[in-house]
Figure 1 (cartoon, one colour):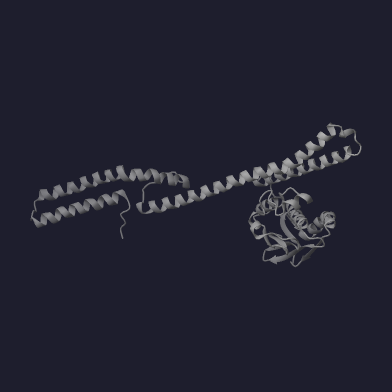
Figure 2 (cartoon, rainbow, N blue to C red):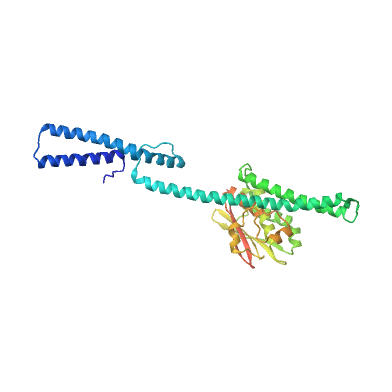
Amino acid sequence: MIKFNSAFKISVLISCLLILILVIANFIYKIFDTSIFIITALLFVTNLIVTYFLLNKFFYDRIKVIYKSIYKFKGTSTITEIDIDHVEKEAEEWAEAKEEELKQMKKDANYRREFLGNVSHELKTPIFNIQGYVQTLIDGGLEDENINLKYLKRANKSINRMINIVDDLEVISRLETEQDELDLQKFNIVELIKEVFDQMEMKSSEMNISLSYKNESQSDFVFADRDKIQQVLMNLISNSIKYGKNGGNVDIRLFDMESNMLIEIGDNGIGIAEESLDRLFERFYRVDKNRSREIGGTGLGLAIVKHILEGHNQSINVRSTKGVGSTFSFFLPKNQ
């Protein structure tokens, strides 16, 4: 079936209809002069040209401007012929895409405002603490042996907190800008877990939380960036300890999943409310703000985990029940 979806085709249709009317009129009035057929042919050509010109000038040229804008946003620089059947569809698709883009821009703008507010809040607390301690020492506390060393230690603790925040922000920035290349290699994930447990032993002892692992995989080896996976494990275990219960435990389990290894870090801690799960990996987002600030941490650990695993073309997953505990999991390819 022929579709009349271009200026030329529509012009031909109109011209043919006009000629058909003239031919029928000739038959009705029995006019069969040769000159009439010549005039009819000339009328056909003339009408075709005029109709095509008028359609282009008053309709298609104006539509073409909109159509070119749509193609420009789609990344196509030139178009040859406008298909009127697809103009409406593509205009709707373009409008929907722009609406979705606008929503995303508003979401990103809100995220940036919230992020800047969080950065300001996180840095403001240690800065004000340092300012207070230093001012007290200047006002005479430096000569008081009961407070001078104590306030200097507290100021130093606040300085270390600021350094940790800046360091973590630099890590995220480096991961986002892809300036931090992965050093992919074969390594023993079980040995790495033992090393991380050794490093986290003091922190877990303070919280009276036991650390354990179980390898249910047929292999001990994965193919990834060892240092970055170590950071992932440390951040996840630290998070589980931070939100754990006194006398609780943190368990790591390894499973075979075809060519990948599934790594799960589970705890029986306070758990995470369902409404917090979607925002859990945002920078500075804290499930329990009071508890996390008392224990320490920058609020960037899970965001770093997310970025590192995305750099490995993997994702971090979490399931949690309030008051029962949480389990974080991710995949790594086995030795390649």
